[in-house]
Image (cartoon, rainbow, N blue to C red; front, top):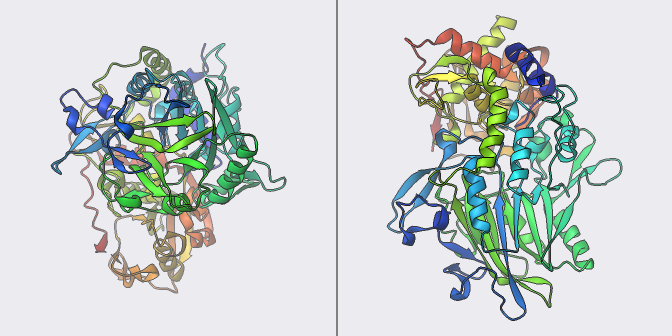
Length: 618
């Protein structure tokens, strides 16, 4: 889910309207809370077997004859979460040996910086990397400033290498290049007198993102880190299916290549250059059997499913580990490579709640990583540790600029209104609320609008009843609304035939979406049955589809509200792009804000919708 090409101007309008020009003025082992006992720390996954530390020896840069120790600290899907994330996006699940679980509050750049710095102690050969979506779909503190604050925070954390993800393209390729190289925003300019954005200190890798005309990568395909006489190559790729989940205008002229073929190509190139130690940063992921970050992946990664498993089993055996992302799931799994040897595949959930620590031995004669020495575990970024003072100072600078926009109340809620990130369900209360808000906005454009459809990937967080700051419980601030809908999409209205509308519903669960259905959230009055016991398009029970109680007429015309991402056929819903008589409305966040303001008050707050418009059969 991404923004539209108008995101820059939309952000500019938000700033102009609400800030009056202000912005242009002058582990679990080491990271669990102290209450957690040492025996209940995260298990370590090795490339040889799941269990204790390899060889049982100390890992802090010991020389073992011809080998030396390396450490890789890894993140993914940070999404600009500089401030401690709230709701489900700010918790991780810990599984105890007796099978019980508990939730731990986690995340926040100040705590993450401290955790990384603590983890590096005693490891002179350490490198910090990330597997994409470090920016994009960001909360207001970062998103309002085109993610410059996040890049500056990652610089301060000594990030070494970042692979590109799909959300790095939210504002288009040109903006991604600006984040790498620096310079003031082409429309919003610099945010304080004399303060020019300097760009990322780390390389952003995009091996499989190439110019359609020249075939050359948009950014560097790989980098080689030199660590006290040791050379390690890092290759960065995003999922080949990125064009299906981003706005076409933002990636115009670019082609996204096969992940495995691209990694294999550059692994060979690195080997020709004498670099045999290779780690792939892959913005594609999997789904573990358990939500616990310290869950056992099983033999040969048997408890891990999803696209990354095929990628891992087919990627050149010369790659020593795959650091992955995209699915926002936590796992450290051992999956066999094409030669049948175990290889670690890792992901550290999202929002900076975890980081993965990988340790390994490097053989100075073969100039390669000793595969059987590779082991890793996910570490919790709990909030019991001290905050990093330099990150606090950086956040305070941006918070001062954002405050007039961020703290404005836009509505009141009586309880948590969860997203699918909280429930894991295909139908969820916040999705229905947003669909209702977009229907209300669309009817201001065209009173004949019949229904609204909202893509689940565009709902980025929960609305939580507990106050995130000093606003008070139940108050929804502009910053909280921005965190839920950060893309600056517009609300559009288009005409579909009844048959086309039924086809859109079937596209949610078939074709490119069959393996991982993308269930659109629907506005009040639109109902149907989703039968997950069936396969493909048959999951949509056609004769159950109703609008205000009446069956959909395949020959009739319906006015449908969708955001601009969906209007372009996003999320594999190509039939939406065939809609006629289009009308382009206002910003989707403004639609939500207006709806909350009009339909709630401190005395009469909004309750969570029942999430029962789609009947799900399992």
